[in-house]
Image (tube, rainbow, N blue to C red; front, side, top):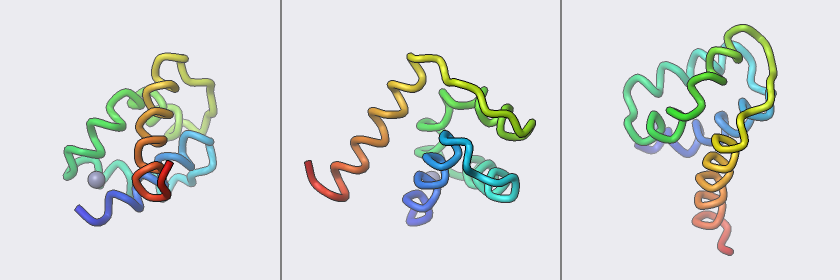
Length: 81
Ligand SMILES: [Zn+2]
């Protein structure tokens, strides 16, 4: 799905607490229809809830490292190592 690359960027913003609620809703809509993104974001489910509530909290280290690894993979694919 072509839209995924766009949403992965949104996910990154949203981890930084910089996504707005409209984008957050869009992201969740996409996740309903996209397994790939859902798997990636699955560990971030708690954060989705926090996003809805407008809070920003530190991710558990295990989840943060998983996300960082996933993002790094994508970055390397796009820009090279
Ligand atoms: Zn997707």
